[in-house]
Amino acid sequence: MRVIINNGIVNKGLLNSNFAGGLYGNNQTKSSHKLVQSNKSPIASFDETTINQRNQYSTVQPKIKMVLKNKEEVVPGQRPTSPHVTIYKFPLPAVMSIFHRVTGIALGVGLTAVCGASLFGAHDSVYYLELLKNTYPLLVAPAKFCVAFPLVYHTLTGVRHLFWDETLKGLHIKEVDKSCLLILAVSIPISLILAWISI
Amino acid sequence: MLKSSKLFQPRLVSGIFGGYVPNSSIVPINNKSGNILIQSRYAGTTTKTMDKKLPDPSQAIISHKAFHYSTFGLVTCLPVSLLLPTSGLTAIADILLSVFIPTHFFLGMNSVINDYIYQSFLRAGSKLLVGGCAFIILGGILTMTKNGVGLGGTIKALWK
Figure 1 (cartoon, each protein chain N blue to C red):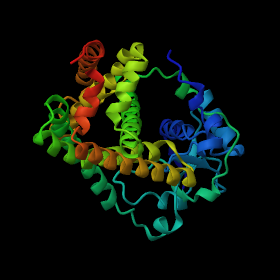
Figure 2: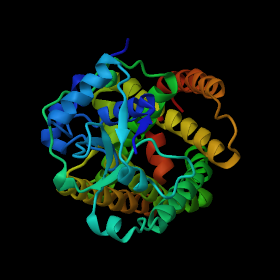
Figure 3: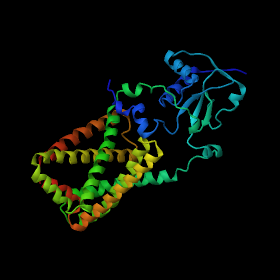
Figure 4: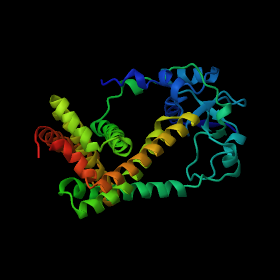
C-alpha cells in the first residue's frame, strides 16, 4: 500500500526542524535542506507498516511519523542556522518582553549589590549612597534614572502580565501593541522626571 | 530589517553555553524503507519515553504559582515601602518584601537560566549563584529593616 502525503505539511515540519539548526549533518539533512530551499512538492510515500505506527493519541490522520530519539543519537552537523533568526524584525511586544527580563535581571543584580553592601559592608548602604552623591554629584541623575526606569518599567509590565493572567483580556495583538505603547509612554517620562527631582 | 546581534548566534555561544538545542524539537531522519522524510522527536531521557509517562508537572505548577503570588506580593508591598515615610507599616512591608523579592528573583532567574543555558554544569552553577544572591537579598533587606532604614528608605536615600 502506498499513500501520497501532502508535502506542504512535510515542508512545515522541516521549517520547524530547521530552527534546531545543526542537529543533523548527514545526507538526508542535505536533501531535506534542498527540499525546503527549492520549494518543490515531491511525492512522498509511506508503506503500510509506517502508517500503522502513526500517533495513536491524535484524532487526525498523521502526515508524518514521530520517532523518539535520545540525545546521544543526535549527531550535530555543520549546517548553519536558519537565517530567519537574524533577519526577523522583532515586533514591539517581543522587544518589550526581552526588556522585561533585562530590567528584571538588572534590578536583581543591583538589589544584590545594595543588600550585599548592607549585609557585609563596614557601613550601611545609605552611607555608600551618600558617598556616591558627595563624590560624584554628576552621576546622581544617571544613577537615579538607572534605578527608576527598570523599576517603573518592570513594575508596569509585571502588572500587565498579572492582568493578562487573571482576566485573560487584552491579549489580542492590537491590544497588546496599545498596552506596549502605553507602558512606554508612561514609564519613560516618569523615569526622566524621577531622575531630575529630589525629595 | 532589524538584525539581532551576532553574539546570539549559536555557533558563537554554543562553545560556552552548550548547543542551541531545544529540549523537544522535530528533526528529520533517514527511512530505510523509502526515500522519504520521517520526523523524529528529540527526547531528553530514555526511561520516560519507554514507560510512556509524561514528566511530573507538579513541581513546575508549584513554582509557577509561587512566582505568580510573589508578583502579587510585590505589587502590594513595594508601593507601601517606597512611597510611605518610614514607619511600622513600612517595616512590616519590608519584612514581607524580604520573602517576596528573593522568591520572585530566584524563580524568575530560574526561567531565564532554563531558557538560555543548556550545559548542565553551567545551568546548575548559575542556579546556585542565583540562589546565593536570593539569600543575600533576604539577609540584606532584613538587615536594613533591623537598622530602621528599611528597603524603601535605602532606595529613597538616593533622592534625598
